[in-house]
Length: 590
Ligand code: DON
Figure 1 (cartoon, rainbow, N blue to C red):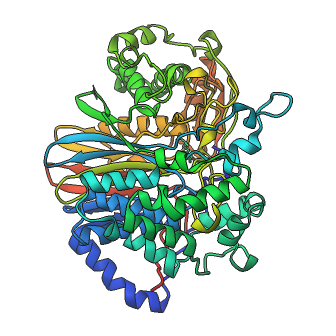
Figure 2 (spheres, protein in one colour; figure 1 turned 90 degrees about the vertical axis):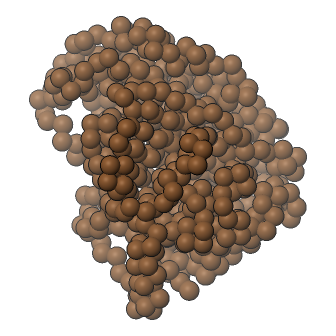
Figure 3 (cartoon, rainbow, N blue to C red; figure 1 turned 120 degrees about the vertical axis):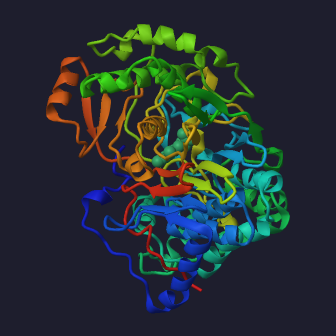
């Protein structure tokens, strides 16, 4: 992953979080009470700050301390893990808009402790009815990266507000008016923007300045905000209040919907009121499989993540990875990744629009065949298997993992796609729209921002959801379980895969988030190895001798994991140490 969005904070000197006197006075007792009474929070603050916290009550791991606290505040109001997830999601929409928000979508797994049921909420964006592939092509037929990534044509109809309202109504305990309270307060009163937000605004300045409402929101008073400034978002506060009062209708119908459509149309987009009114969050059955005695519960289509994860784990199931030297272990992991991504590109899309051979893809017998094709001492060339090409992405998204005191669990990944989505804020709504249309195969055979290539299964059609790599998952063993997920575009799938293997190997939450990552996605045909990886030179040499192209890649991901040891009832929440400084700046404005 390029360093566009994933700062190398772990390589930088620690930047200490500071508390202003005023904030400290107000804040410290509340934070202590929250931790003592309701559980723990984990957030990455700086290289010196703790990133793992333990509790026997409730645990939340998110990418931003203010959002984590919002989750605890909602638990304190009588909410459960689902309500806490709603508070985290809406607070992140305010404080981490570069990664997710009301103008985007999410995929979430929910575990209901009372019934033991696991379910999946699909709040993925969908294409507007008037979508036209020609809008994403230049006159010479080549992809138009500007329309697919910037401005309103890049935006799918948002799923987040509908998904949150659905979750609250069916699985939550408190009304949206309670779970949205922290986000409304943050938007109204303001907060100190994190350094990643400040950097993201700087990086996307040219696009943001194209649109008056985006410039107004992200350059208050005409100036780029600094981490010491107070950043307010009155437009989004008003939209959040409309949702708090009227649920999904507060966004998809009435004044907010009219303003969304007006603003989108005025800047060349095609959304209609009917597109908004027809959006529905969908509840689907998760994918389940077993690996090494653990039950894995994960995301079904329109995510490709769960299918790919199942293929990789099924391929590896009979292989004794522990007895292998490191080069061969990596070899088998990479070959499993290669084969899963080939199928990802080929078959997967919105289950309501395409027929997918899921029985085949999820079958251990299919995996047996794929395993047979792995050469024990040599890299398979992707070109020997049918397919296509790719390039480096720039990206952003966010994942949170929550377990409440009753054992309800939420694993939720939310996104506006790349950093600050389309860069387009829709008029007075304050809502920053996603650029998720780029996750469709807009021009068949051409890579998207993550180098993923698709065909007809993921072609854009009005009302269809674009394929996602988001892979919120649960890993459930006899004595231990993990709630896991990450941002990272196509690398989400391999990060979760490696995280699951680490958990099954006995690693703790902090170790899982910190471990160095490898990635292969079929095309480009190369193994990405995270910069600073501790893989020894002789292992890399062996891999090269097997035929692998090794690519040193800047750090990627922002994983947030909760591990629950049932033998001790200890829950450990850990945030990714790659998560940069600034996030944990525990300050808020009241
Ligand atoms: O749904 C997807 O697969 C992408 N829109 C996710 C983007 C992402 O993870 C960017 N991350 N850092």
